[in-house]
Amino acid sequence: MTLPNLLAYPDPRLRAVAAPVVAFDGGLGELAADLVAAVEAAPAVGLAASHIGVLRRVIAARPPGGAAVRVYVNPVIEWASAETMVNEEGSVSMPGVSAEIERPRAVRVVYSDLDGAGRVEEAEGFHAAVLQHEIDQLDGLFWIERLSRLKRERLIKRYQKLVGRSAPLAILPP
Image 1 (cartoon, rainbow, N blue to C red):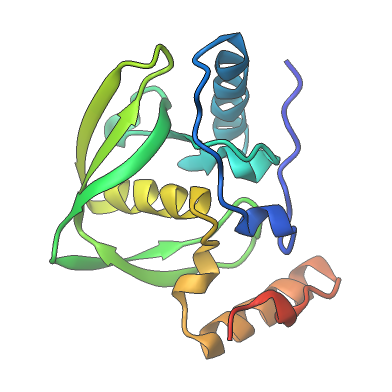
Image 2 (image 1 turned 90 degrees about the horizontal axis):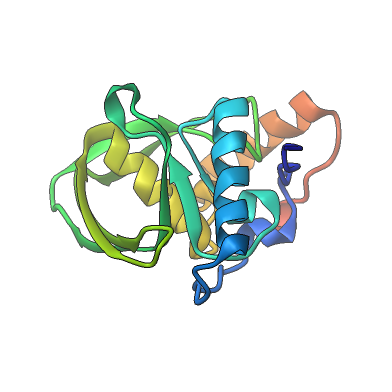
């Protein structure tokens, strides 16, 4: 299997909303295998299909405790705790930079497995943050949009220096 290419910021597909999966077939299985391989090769704790240029609602994430990477099809956060936490987050599409992001400490995610069977998972702590981060990505919300404008601009400038090219600030929301 050839590993898929990861999109790099500021590719506009990183801010596109992913379409729901309707066909639970061999194509979905191939996409899932590509995502799992990409998570393992990156190395990453999670990856949305949009990171590899596929705008479908599929993510792959490592559960806590070193378990095998799990695939979530059409995931939706059904419930989020009022209690929050702060984690250091980054993206395989924007390597070398990270920032603290505040998110709910616990979530309940409703999703389908690769056969289309409905599943529910409750997660807390870092794993909850990973799921929220990747579901944000499916919703077209790139992680830096959770930062204040000033912090985003500083982070983008750090990233520009790292990669040696100009990443436009113009794609940021006002």
